[in-house]
Each structure stands twice: as structure tokens, then as C-alpha cells.
Image 1: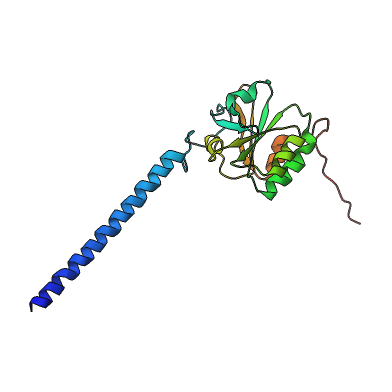
Image 2: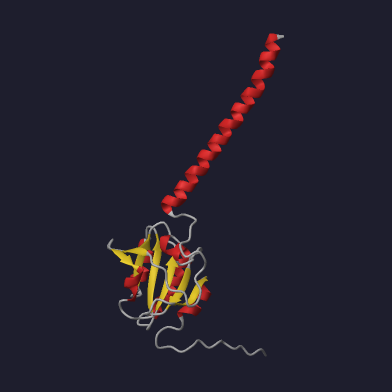
Length: 195
């Protein structure tokens, strides 16, 4: 009888101890996730909402290819309107988009390519080949501040730092935002005549 009481008492205590241990592990995992979010900024947006027309471009820091820090305010030193293009480092659609933007060399709007983290050599070469400024962002900080969640993505900013076109996603939307290549008028649609 004492053995049954011992078993009857120990089983609920063991189950309770197991539940407490699982709860403690869950709390520890939650604390770790919250600390990581705070430390890296992951999942957090400083601007609080997507950028809209008329919003000022939020401050962010990026790195030039030579490793020097570049604040967002320095991008306006030339006094030109700007297209900010956010690309992924190993993304085939991003490379294809840069190739499509190559004819924009000499366009009155400045094109700034912001790549996430490390930069694929071909992507850097494409950006520089097209005469564009290529920057690196760490941990997606510039993307988050600008409300960018998917790449490729672009937004247009006036020379005074005011957003004139909020973030758009995808090749066609970005090419539309970029406008025609320098020296060319708008593209005319092809018309086919059916017999």
C-alpha cells in the first residue's frame, strides 16, 4: 500500500515537474527571441508604417563597397532626385533588373543600389557598370527603415529627401517607376494587325 501511495504521489509530482521544466524552457526561448529582436532589430520597423508620398526618407546607415559608412543624408549631396533600389545578394531577378536598368546611365535621377549583407560580385559589377552607387546594408536595417520587406523593391525620393513614390515591388513596377532610359521618350506599345 505504501508503494502505491508512493507511486500515486510521485507520478503527479513528476508530471508537474515536467510541465514546470517545459514552461521554463518556453520562457527561456521567448526571452532569447525578444533579446535577439532587440539586439539585431529583426522584425522591427523604425518608421512604424510603410512609407507614403510626402514622408521624409528615414535615416539609415549603409556601407560603401570600400567599407566606409554612408549615412542616408549623404546620398543627396549631388542635389539630384533618387531611385533607391533594394536588391538581394544572390537573387537572379535582382540581377536581371539591374541589367534592364543599364541603359539608364546618364539619367537625371540618381540610382542607388542597396544590397542586403554580403554582395555577389556580379551584382556589384552590374551596379557599378551602370554607373550607379552600390551600398551594402547590414541585417536589413535600411530596408526596414524604408518599409521594404521584399526584394527587388524601389522607391523614389526627391532631392530634398521627401518620398515621392512609396516602395514598389517587382521588375515591371520598378521599371515603370524608373522611367524611360535617358534620351528616350515613353515606350510605345506594339500594335499587331490581325488578318
